[in-house]
Length: 313
Length: 283
Image (cartoon, rainbow over all chains, first blue to last red; front, top):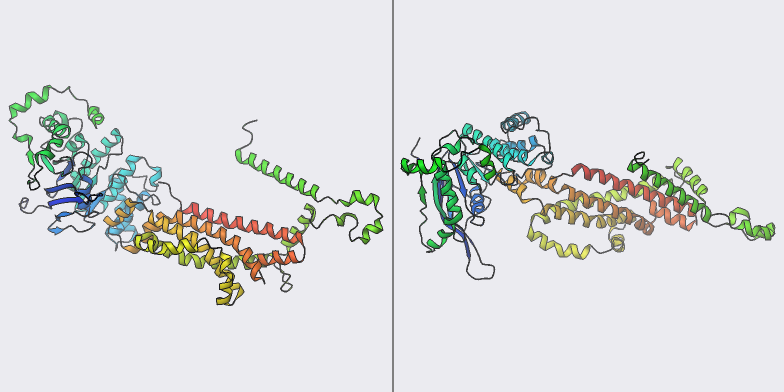
C-alpha cells in the first residue's frame, strides 16, 4: 500500500454551506469547517441528526450540489460536477418506472461504456442483477417489485458502472427491518468482493457498526461539523448474529448512542467561535485498556439474539 | 341471480335498453300526425295543401327512414357525382386529412417548443404571456386573417386546426417536462448521460403520458373545430356536407352527418386512449 495519509483517495477541505437568510438578516450556515479523508477501499458511514447537512455533503461529493466554500478532491482531481466515477444509490431508489429491471441497469452500463454492443451491455447488466439476487426478475417493471427488490436494483445499477467510489444516502431508510438486514448482508458481501470505497449516510447505529470501517459523527446544525470519528475496530468478516459478542461492540455502540443523544447538541455551543478548528476527536476502542472493556461489556447486556439488532434498527 | 351477469354485461344490457327507449320515443314523436286530421278532411284537399297522408307529418325522419339512409349512404361511401354530391367517406376523408395535417403541424411545433419551455424557467416566463393571450381566442376568429394571408380556403382550415391544436399540446408538454422527477434527472446526471440521450431516454418517456394527454385534448378540439371551419370555407368536408344538406332541407342527411361526426370523433379519441395506455407507467 502506498502511504495513504499523504495521498488520500478522497479529500474534503473546509467544506461549508451557507444560505442567505430569507428575511435579509444573517446568513444561515448549515455546516462549515468540514474536513475529512477517505482512503481507497474504506467504508465510511456518516451519522447525525436531521438538518446537519449530511445529505448536502453527499450531494456535493456526487457533484449534484455545490458547496459555498471549500473543495473536494478525488484521486487528486477536484470534484466539480457529476461523474461516472462516483456511483450514487438514492434513498428513493430512483428507478425509471417505464424500464424493466434489466433496462434500468443496462441504461447505466450503456452510459458508462457507450461503445459496447447490446449483447455485451446485457451480459454485464445481468451479472450485476444476479449479484444482488434478482435473477429471474430482470424483465419485471419496478412497480412489480417490493421496496427491498427496488433498492437492490438501485444497488445493482450503482455497482454495474464500477465506480471508483459509491455514495449512499440512507439507502435502506425506507425498508422494513427484516429486508434491511438481508440487504445489509448482501452489501457487506459485495463490498468485500469488490473492495469498493463507500461513503454512506445512515441514521441507524447498528447499520453503521455492521458495515463501516469508520463512523463520522456530525454535530447538530447550524454550524454543524464532524465532531467525532469512531474507528470501527470490529474484525471482518462480520456476522450480524455474532457481532455483539465482540469485545469492542458495546463500547462503540454506547459511544455512538451517547453522541446522538447528548453530545451532538453540546458540540455546537462548545465550538461557537467562527475560527474554531475542525479537528474531530477520534474514538478508537483499541485504545481502551482491555481490562476496562471486558467487565463492562460482556456481562451487562443480555445475551443477544440476532433479531434484537433488527428490532433496534 | 346476482352473479349471473358481469358488470360489463349489465352495462351492455342497460345500454341496449336505453337505445330501444330512444328509438321508441323517436318513433312516437315522428308518427304521422295527419292520421287523426285526415279523418275529418277531404283527402283531395289535404293533397292540395301539399301534404297528404303519412308524408305530411314533418321533415324529421322516422327511425326506419333514418336507418334506410344510413344503410344507403354507408353502402356507397366513396361515390363522387360532382361538387355537391359526394359519398360520406370522401367528405370525412377531406375533413380527416385537414385535421391530421393541422394536428401534426401543431405537434411538430408544440412538442419541441414545449420541451424548451419545460426545461427552462427563463423560456417559460418569456413565452407564458403569449400563450395566455393566444390560448383563449376562438380558432375561428383566425379564419379571416388566414384567408387573407394564405388565400386558400382549404389551407386556411388547416391553419385553424393548427392553431387550435397547438395550445393543449404545448402546455401539456411543458408541464410534463417541467415535472420530470428530480431523482431521474439526478440519475442521468451522475451517469453523465448526454443531453440528446437524456431528452429521448429519460425526459420524453417520463413526460410521455402528459404529452399524450395533451395530444388527446388537441385532437378532440380539432375535430370539433373542423366542422365549423368547413361550414365557413365550404367546398368539401363533413362540415360543408352538413351545411349543404341544411340548405337542401334534408334533415335525414344532416342527422346522418351528425352521427358520423360522432363516430369518427369517438374513434380518434379511443385511438389516443390506446396510445396513452401504451406510454403510461406506474411508479
